[in-house]
Image (cartoon, rainbow, N blue to C red; front, side, top):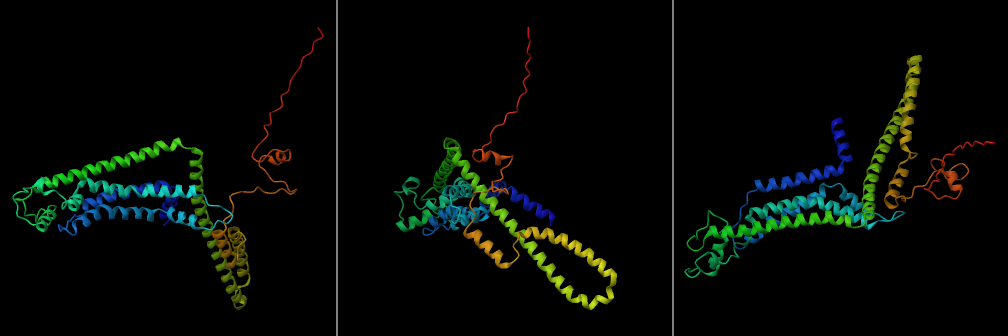
Length: 360
């Protein structure tokens, strides 16, 4: 159990690397899934296009949504977008940065699926076999087929087992033609994705780095703040439950003390002192984790206020007894001398000068 807890804590502390690994596993999984997937074109004019395009589009949409589901930052993004403003305003650039970060990772597996599907060419062959030019691949002047029969014959080109029109059209030539077009689109898709990724990497430094660093900092802050709040609530719940159970057992044992008082004697008194000593030490540590909140109504109010009105991101320094703010490293005196917060007067050490006088 401890090993699983350590692994979970490691994944939480390295969430970005963990999500990159998940995206890589999903990309490999999409390629492996397509390799193990048995492509069966219906070879019917009414269903060929829907089946071929569906295999090309629907699985990437599923992989894209799965990437959002597996990303823990989605709930954080939705919570930050829907929360009341309260004392803390919402920054649209931070929300945009978080959404783009999630979308970029979620698009890796769909891109791999589309690339593999286009390189294989089966979906394009199934979807567009009916649209082939019969005169380009067959003997268009010596056939007595109706339009419906011709369409049905073209629809059976992807299915080698049931194709019976070799005397009318060359199946090998039509198959090679459609697969070459599919592979050409596959390479164009890879080139487009690579160029887009390169442009994003190359253009980003051309913009203001301060704005990028600001959005990145506050997105990390929102994530860390949420984790720490959950951890604090968990510690508070554990301490609250522990003290509540201890008080329950103490109340029950107090009722039973009178019944067993004559049998215990001094041994019970000594053991009670030891237990009380340990209980006081344990309750002292648990009391600190309660942070002064000891009632259900108070805790509900804290949780409600955290959702509706989060504290402003403007930390205040502690107050000195005389009313001045306590600043680190003796900054209170600097403030009294008129220096603003965050600035320190550079104090140079005094140098001792020795002068030698001569009457000559």
